[in-house]
Image (cartoon, rainbow, N blue to C red; front, side, top):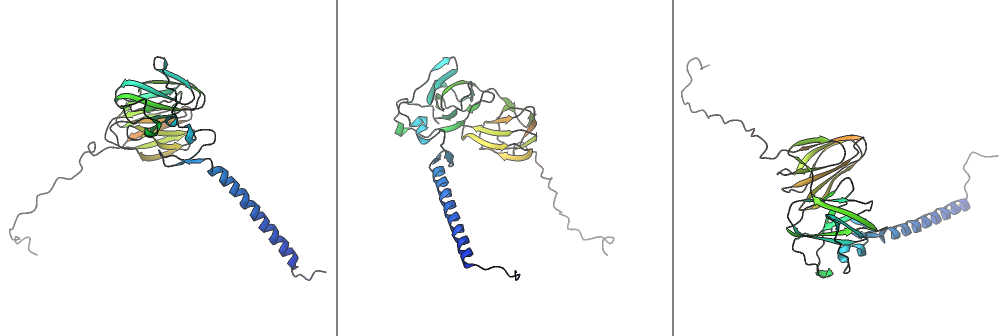
Length: 285
């Protein structure tokens, strides 16, 4: 018959202790293996300072500018370029006007641009500068590049066949506030470097700023309604790329006023009193 006291067993406690220690050891080994396999795939991106998972592509050896035997592709039809795998595109006699690059296939293309117009095609791999990342062009939303006068050098990083169209930028010019739905390229030429962004509805709301100084700069990666101010790298020209589901949401971009745009609100100065007359009798208490 039970006395109501808990049963004490040194053997049971030792068994439980051995089980807990064994389970902890096995768990630690599993976590160590997972961590090792994960970090073995990671690499540091000197362009962004971030760690990147190289599983499935884009490892260090895949950087096209590190390939001494990289093919240079030529246009196949006017301003359309095509290839299979990593390649370089060089276009002579370009100006500094922005261009747009549109993906004509379903490949996952990553673009980078050499930050110079003085290009030496025979430059040794070890002497090449790290290029500027300029985005992932899509069929319904181009990437934007700001060439340097001379030769445009684009590095194509991709697995499999691809097609790209390179042409002058087609974007809506804005000066203050604009609203819309779906994907859009907006170009702003002014001194402001921030705006108020608003998104209502459902679906994605991705905003990227393209400038000559930084190439591609992500401002928003959202899927919920928002009303938030965001800034970009100051530049004389910025292209805001908006990616959004046209049938599920709407957006507003309101460029912040700059000092030059804001009217002065300083009140007029009041003249200082100059009278030294003594108070009159009516004024004397």
